[in-house]
Image 1: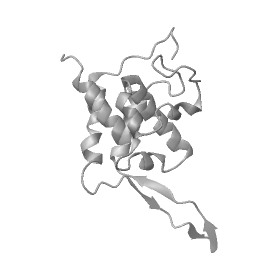
Image 2 (image 1 turned 60 degrees about the vertical axis):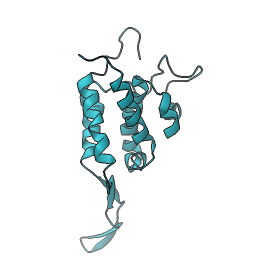
Image 3 (image 1 turned 180 degrees about the vertical axis):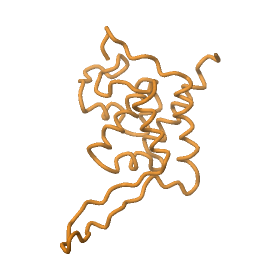
Image 4 (image 1 turned 45 degrees about the vertical axis):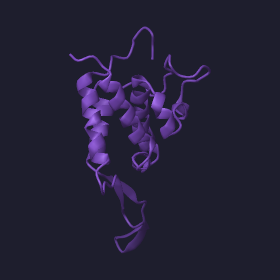
Length: 156
């Protein structure tokens, strides 16, 4: 966050779009992803080893759209004023809110940053978002906290 170029506020409409994810991921039988690819294929008569990759539920596309094409975007590596003293900017920002229980006191901007960080982490660690969406996980806790924060916002 650059004090000379503050991040715009997360709009209520975009927050509502994020909250629309919650009933989907909490539905009975929700599966965030499956793994495709068995690790081997035959190309031109030769066996080729390939890596399996996650095939995500469509709700993850909603997360991508929110994270990069809406007011939810925030600098994922910037320190926020509400972060603990001594927090350093950089790739370690996921440690600011290390688990589901830490989301109970998260601010709106900390949740925004967490969501964008999840998208960044997925680029370098396939399956990351799937792990975050597990029942009782940090993503669900973040969405529950977001619902609380949204309910406390003044009506338009």
